Amino acid sequence: MTGTDTAKIDASPDAFAGDCYGRVVLDQLTSRWGFLVLVALRDGEHRFFQLRDRINGVSEKMLAQTLRILTGNGMVERHVTPTVPPAVSYTLTPLGSSAAEPLNNVFEWIKAHAGEIGQHRTG
Image (cartoon, rainbow, N blue to C red; front, top):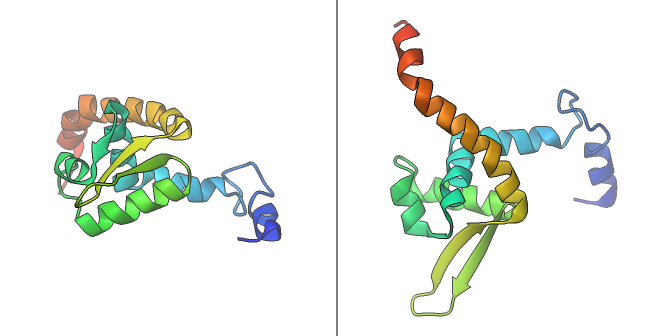
């Protein structure tokens, strides 16, 4: 992205505005897998396979893509230990931790109310 592209995207700090980069961040944080990865990493460092096993239903391809996006946005840090094969693990950055905290509150609310919400579903 060039400097002018960034200026154009950041033109409005209002996530309701179409040119706000906050919408991109909102999409990433509220995607099912991005949300779950950030909440899972609150517990500390995880290797790829640990995240895959913890987040039931995520494919390896989708998990890799999600981790790449979150790493690229400065929310997740990727650590490579030079072993054979290389050991790759992931942790939250301070920015990721600050995002994961309110997401965890939403996660806990969902756990507490999922049954009740399910009772109201029709069809």
